[in-house]
Amino acid sequence: MALITSGTAYVDTVAGTNDSSHGGSSGSGACLTLAYLVAYRLGTLTGPLVVDCHGSTADTVQPDIGDTAISTTATNTLTIRANAADRAVPGWDANKYRLSVTGTLLCRIREGYVNFDGVQFELIPTGAANFFTDTARSSSGISVFSGCVFKGDGGSAYQCREIGGAATRYYINCLVYNLGTHGNSYLAFGYGANYLYNCTVVGAASGPDCVVRNDGATSVECKNTYAGRTSGSGACFYGTLAGDYNASSDTSADTKFGTGINSVAVNTTNFVDVTVDGGEDFHLPVGTGSALYDVGNAPGGSAPLNYTTDIDGDTVATWCIGVDSRPAAATFVPYPLSSRARGGLLVLNGGLQ
Image 1 (cartoon, rainbow, N blue to C red):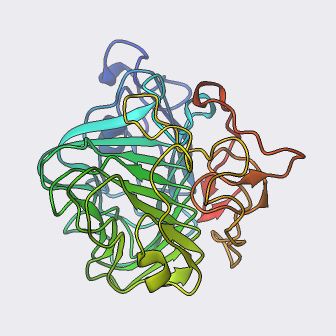
Image 2 (image 1 turned 180 degrees about the vertical axis):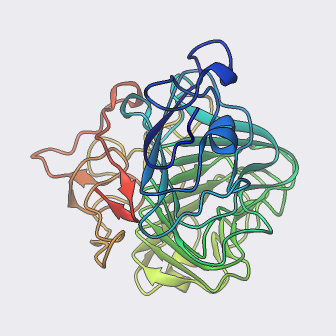
Image 3 (image 1 turned 180 degrees about the horizontal axis):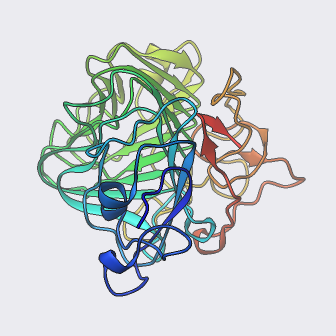
């Protein structure tokens, strides 16, 4: 069976009977796990490759992207996306595709130009844990994480959760929440240049001494991003950070940034549902009562920071802080999580198309 080097490959967690009978291409079925696809079915890329992921059963095997050389470049990119029916929304949906791994690392990325779009990630740590990182990480390249959801387990294990992969990383319209209660559980960035735009990051109760932290990275820039804690103390934004138009549940947004909004609590005044029980929903509530409503700023810049949509794929009329913004429609009325529709947002070559 020929290796896949461009075009589209497929992962379906409920297709077929075993990995070996599902080659990953449209002509030979779908692989049951992303890990199997990247380990056995991908060759050296000759053009852009999109991996379309689907299935209501959790994908529980840790992928090692780049363990076998795929040689990504600025033109030969690897984009791993959720199928149109499985795209993430600002909460959790156990009926959609999700990479859910128990261990100390959710996914290993050894190459640059690896992008993720609309994927749900869950890390259930057994010790000091990270979402994405590796000592053999790429020293160059760009990775874009757009419209993704990163969920911790809210537990007491040490969870210093870096999201890594390439030398320069963009996180656009991403939700990170339910980080653990250990004092060193936070979203940390330890290398490279990082951009958090229109993200919502929520720490778990009674633990983290920060929520978003520069922990030795070359740079961390935040815009239209919310960092909040459900309880406890310590700075929500910590370390050397750049950016503007951010908000926090403490006073660090105003301290760190020129235009910052303080004391925005993680509650149902500012979000639809903040209880982590499978029905959590970090959309803004109906109406204009949320302190995050209409206080953002157009992202601007060149690709991928020229995006014009929020996590739901809605074209934005007025920018809010966090993953949910007011769409270009007459009335801003968020739908319930179960019925919210997503557009076909795709990341290619670092641009939102």
